[in-house]
Image 1: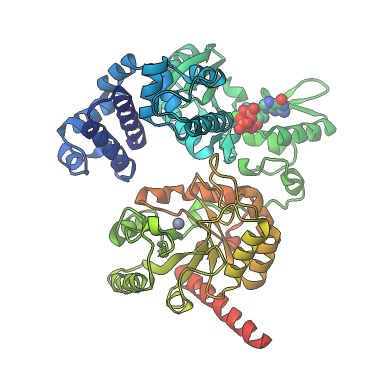
Image 2 (image 1 turned 120 degrees about the vertical axis):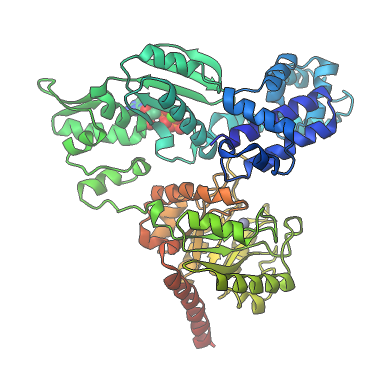
Length: 583
Ligand code: DGT
Ligand code: CA
Ligand code: ZN
């Protein structure tokens, strides 16, 4: 689907127009169109002109631009704007806290044409004092540049994966390929990646490389050869494409999937039994005789190991477990039966129930839990007791019209600064599922944050703690919390921890998942969907669970609806009973 690319393109056009100082209405039109196209689940390529025009903010003019992009992968207006405005200015626009107005000032008043110029300006003390730029703004820009440099080193998986998939699709469509695969940290679903590693086979590598270097996404060609070619994408991510021999493809895939630590251990193991493995194949040490390499599985078989899923290849005990026949049968995305963290237009989501139900059914789900924000989150239009009761009534009514699918009544209740919940127990008790989470006071002390989470876990009505560490990848560090203490309490009370599958969060992280397993804590994997397309993030959550060695039995939303409800209810009763015994 090209929706996201078109949304990004429209945003970039809006930014370029804004730097140019164009008509604000025109700029706003591109921004609105970008948001609306980005939130669609339908493929724009499959939509007729009238359908496109029914998307808010899209008139005949923008329909034309969409058609142009679908046909030619570029838009003339965008190309013209890029000729007029130095590309480096868009880099400056990526600095957190710098808007187009500032960029315009920098360009016009100080001849800044890129990040380097801006950094020089700051170093020489000439930034503050430009029109509209105070000392404080200078300090913010300096910090923003630092963050950008730090963020550049590793990219969130959610950014790199779609780029990798798109390149693979294009190469498949446009070049004479045999096999192609994404390797490296992306194949292992590591939460951040340094670069994109691609492997292919082809009878005509020159042609493959030529097409690769001329893809629209390419900003710069770093290295051009028939065996290996590297490019830099417009987003600044390096992509290496290697073309290898058919007979070595499996060995190369194993080698370049890594991790390095996993490979080192495998090689030692091979050496002990007189074998040698490298990116070309697997060989007998004494006479160099080749015994495999065409298929990846041959490497593991030769070492007497079962196939090890890429998500486990971190030298975290997977090779030992494999040798003992004790590898876990990891959870798969097909085993997920519903999403337990979903927002609607009642708070800050984009859709009403019907659209969400339709999208969930399309994913093959049996249920979703509607978990809008509670009132404390004013900016998200959070629900008070009265609106939540209205929503409960609406869900009951809607459920009566559904067959083979159930909407669970839930809420994402805010854990307030003092650890109390943002809604009274009375209304929480009327719900099927209560998801509690922290949205404020991220800088509180470890003691305070831990106490807040503990008091939420101790409320018998709370079933799940959502995004338990509060991190945003590359943007916000996790808050300081004693996870061992929280896990201990959650284990004692049967409260589940969420793996928030949104690629900006992935919270719990893989290592916390593994830790939660040691405590025997139930997990749920939820997307925190705000629009229907967000349901697709489930794959990221499942991959994170797999990296934490999770099996289907660890995850509550693999249960059929009735068992899940029973499980959620029994958690409450058990709590009530044990509290009763104590007094
Ligand atoms: P990253 O940092 O997100 O790109 O992580 P990877 O794992 O993709 O690392 P990368 O791109 O440097 O290399 C891809 C794979 O190639 C790596 O996982 C294992 C293999 N590899 C690279 N360098 C070495 C090395 O020095 N020794 C061994 N044994 N394997 C290596
Ligand atoms: Ca890599
Ligand atoms: Zn949420």
